[in-house]
Image 1: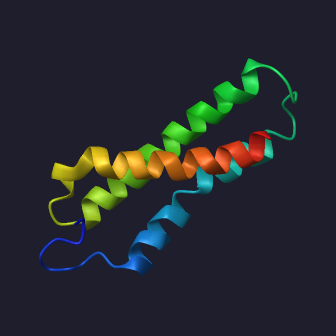
Image 2: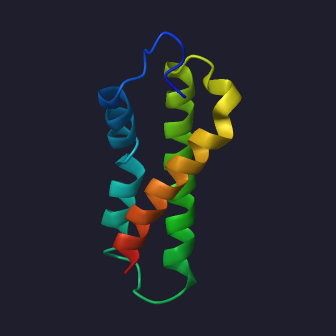
Length: 92
């Protein structure tokens, strides 16, 4: 659905964008080494970095996909789920 009629958005491009936007999660995992294991601080950091990664990935996908602006919520939701799962791996 995101590829459009021209089909310019393939699997390689999608995985490259998702991997490229994983940088905030890498920063979060490095910072989590110095943050206490329990408490709200770790979850707050996780939320901030998930939103950062989601926004970056969504904006890049919308720029690459034809008609991506119409499906902004769909792209953002999928990216949010991916980055939330990676953050949960770091938290726990």
